[in-house]
Each structure stands twice: as C-alpha cells, then as structure tokens.
Image (cartoon, rainbow, N blue to C red):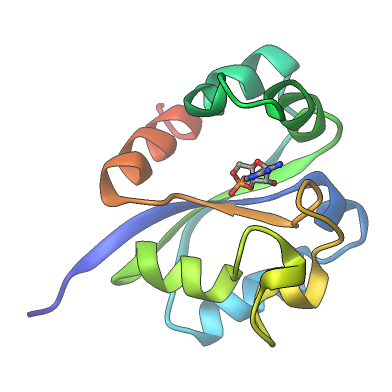
Length: 136
Ligand code: CMP
C-alpha cells in the first residue's frame, strides 16, 4: 500500500552558512522526496525554545535553542513515499561520527550540535512541526 507522507526538514545554521542548501536539497529530490515548500528564515531564541520544547528537560536544551536561532535556517515540507523514515535515513545518525557513509550528517555534519539538518521523527510530530513553521 502506498503511503505518501509529509515531513518537516530544517537545514541548520552551520549548513546554511557553508552554502550547502542546494547540495542538501539535491539529496532529497534525487531520493524521491519532493520539496513542497521551502523558506529561509531566522528565528528568535524564544521560537527555537518553543520548537524544541520536547527536549526542555535535556542538559543540552539551552545550547540547542541558542544554536538554532544563531543564524538563518531553511525550513521545508518534504513529501513522498514514507517521507518521515526516508528523510531520517538520508540524514543519518544524530551524531555525525555515528552516521553511515553518504548520509547528510556524515557528509556535512560537524558535531552533534552542528549536525546540519533536523527531520521530524514521526508522522504525528511531522504534522506539529509543519504546523509550527507553515501555519498560514
Ligand atoms: P535534532 O534532530 O535537531 O534534534 C535535537 C538536537 O539536539 C539534535 O538534532 C542535536 O543536534 C542536538 N543534540 C545536542 N546534544 C545532543 C545529545 N546528547 N543527544 C541528542 N541530541 C543532541
């Protein structure tokens, strides 16, 4: 059975700063994920804190929110067959050191914080995250 899904992807400040946006978008489109929406924005620390509030009890929460709001990011709605898991496979493990060859984080990630991309981890969270950035 076909399951066309949508998921949210963020290209983080480290990758935008290094002009990797087109390289990363190419990886999505070559792997059957359509970019339905894309916008470059610079969010405030309060907005980042709201977006990542699921991590609010974690020791890295403050740094994570400061980092996501430290420079421009590109937020996208990706659509395709099993888009949530497809995107997560393309991204690779959270820590670039643990990521498989040819994944985005292995190719471009610098550290667990500067890991170049974020992707929704479930269909339910994808809906919430898409709503967060594309509510209008
Ligand atoms: P992301 O997929 O955007 O979700 C939360 C982010 O927290 C994660 O990528 C990492 O960049 C960051 N992070 C920092 N430290 C950790 C950690 N110890 N475990 C998981 N994520 C971490």
